[in-house]
Image (cartoon, rainbow, N blue to C red; front, side, top):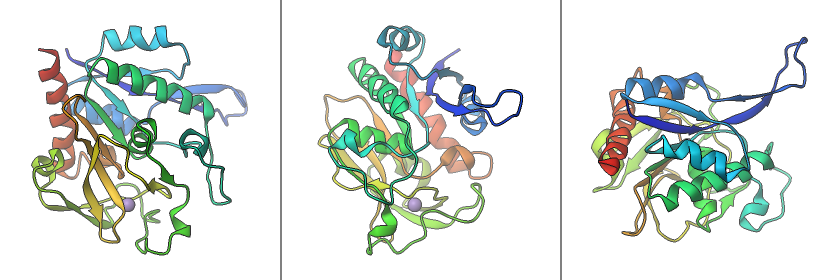
Length: 244
Ligand code: MN
């Protein structure tokens, strides 16, 4: 069966018997979404060893960069501002390496939330460290509703990869306090929220593999919104086409 790699994250266990021990994990919603799309999910552990990454990439045909904590602004050449959230420099290093190795193999790459921001930063773009400080962003992007609730619209560009799955406009969940500021070369914006924030990107360079990034969390919506399940299905199809 076809395999897709998902970037893992580290979390310190809170259980009293295991307190302080780190665990590598991926949220179950991603795992279920990949299963449902017809592929086998492989969790890639946080590592700075490129041999480990290459070995796992040998047995995958595409990569999903998962959501998580803020990316260090040092990655895109800025000092941290007061509104910056939690960081994981270990994970930044790991995912930048994973992204570059997957790109070098022309693997399709799908970035979710932090994953989309990482793609932009890796290719030379920048981020708003805290959108609460940016007056033009008036929509609530860090929703207080549960993750499975859809709370704001996005308008999708014609001819984009997203359009096939989601149409011209759709409702999404929103669980972010950062956003893309300067778009990296080689990318194009394919969806925005109605306050103008970049909600999706795609690669726009014939030398690049298909790269798709979304600012929302489609993995939380695949069982309730057919278009979100189709987004995963289409991505798996892209990976399959690339391999054969
Ligand atoms: Mn949003």
